[in-house]
Every structure is written in structure tokens, then in C-alpha cells.
Length: 52
Image (cartoon, rainbow, N blue to C red):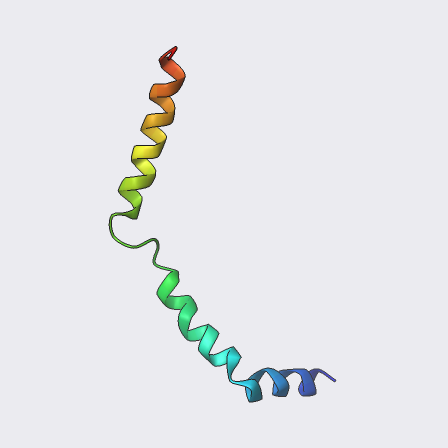
């Protein structure tokens, strides 16, 4: 049964294509995205300090 399931994943072609996409997304967010996250965090901290 295990062999059949592994063969199905390989025969569909979706498995290998998804594996190729994963390494590209692993390094992290696109350049500049980290800066946006940091700005959002700073804004949240500023909003907590400011009464308005």
C-alpha cells in the first residue's frame, strides 16, 4: 500500500513541482518585506503609547 501511494504522488507531477517551489520560498520574504513588518511593529508600539 505504501508503494502505491508513493507512486501516485510521483506520477501526478504535482509532487516534484511543489518541491521545486518550496526551496524558493524557504529563504524568506521578498526584499523589502521585512522592512514593512518592522514598520508595522513600530507603529503598533507607537499606537500603544499614544492615547489617540
